[in-house]
Length: 258
Length: 291
Ligand SMILES: Nc1ncnc2c1ncn2[C@@H]1O[C@H](COP(=O)(O)OP(=O)(O)O)[C@@H](O)[C@H]1O
Ligand SMILES: [Mg+2]
Image (cartoon, rainbow over all chains, first blue to last red; front, side, top):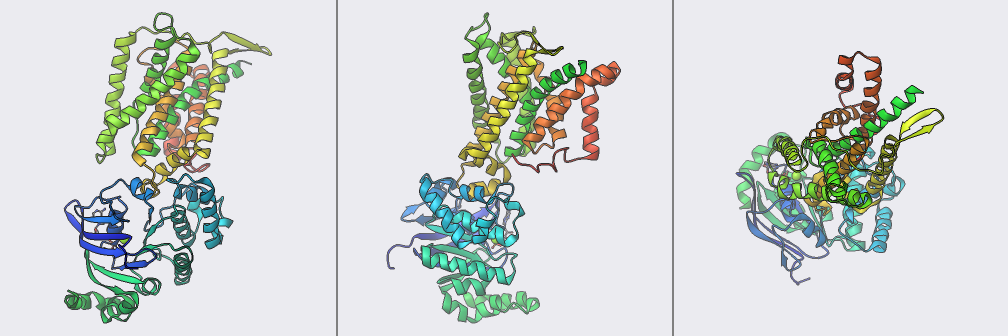
């Protein structure tokens, strides 16, 4: 596994007008890995993914994918390279059927028979989508829409899948189910993933490597197992009960990360 | 019997309104802006056809002139987006709307300069007199307009349902951000939608000019088509067509049965009633916003 990483982000900076949302982020993802980026609401996780997928242009820094620098490219060029972004909040096409949504996932592909094989593969992993294939996507439940968003992403046969908070707004049981399927997709189909999450426990259980992001910066990184044992992670992300004390504690202890 | 004649000529007018309304809705769904020059696109399409086929101009055969005019108008729509509208990206939709209003003036002016302000008649094979069906005399042009509109609607439906580009157009108007995530070149697709609305306007113009004379102000009936689009819900293509047919049919009946002053405002009275009682349009529930 010592070759060049599949995806490498270096000193990336992204702005919303004058607001600097990403403040010099560097990270890398090896082929076949699941890498998670943890962070609270507003840390800049979504902005990071949007910058990689070309929805936003970075001000500084580089994104290299498979040896080529891709920062600032048009989104459809980046998708054709095999980078798919499964957005926060599912973002399905509400008035199109499940089948049509899946077809759009393969929009940049031309190999028809392979596309149909991949549709069957998606239906194997998400049988409920096969059942509902003629239904309008907007009428699906939140969990089913998340499955559709992931399935639609798989239809690209992506070389890397960028997942933005797939656990958002779902019941713990559904989250377990969906993350188990993500794990199988990684092991059985070899799908490389970059997973952005607030739900640190489930993300670290799934991922091989983790990064922690705070206000646009990476403040910590390491193997998922090691991060799971870290006191900081335990205090801020895994101990969800004492919400009241969290912000204060975090302020005091943040310095130990730098 | 008389009623049937009124109905058919009303439906034929309604088809023209409906096709212009279709253009309004296509653009609105794709870009969230309203193209107030849609009626003038229609007029321009009619004059381009006339300029290609009439004896005193290029005198091409009609069946070559008509498709050529449709292509020219499609290209016109596409270029308008590519060269002007795309550069307003990031500006408010109001900027686009004001620009289309100005564009309407420009198109009327240019048409007046090229083709003059006198009403002219398109030498169209669709306008070949009347037919008599069981005692009812129908204008052949009216029948042709209805038939062509049905065929065009059917082809558009097939295009949106069955082709990859049609599906991408639906996707881009339902969720633009997600369309980017799928690798759909959204801006290009929007340009093609402008092209499609130019082509639809050209068809509407050819049909309109087959029914009677046209002059550079003919595009002002776009206001009625706008009313039709609103009545139909402004989010649905079938709704736009239905709204057009309703406005088209109301007109002749109002002219027949209401006092002169009132008949002209009948479509707008309906528009107001719809806005008050069903603000999302008559058809918003029937088929919620499917392209
Ligand atoms: N469209 C926007 N305009 C201005 N600021 C934004 C916009 N989207 C996000 N931000 C700001 O950028 C920062 C990072 O946001 P985001 O990447 O969405 O965080 P996360 O996904 O980690 O919750 C936040 O401070 C947020 O307020
Ligand atoms: Mg986010």
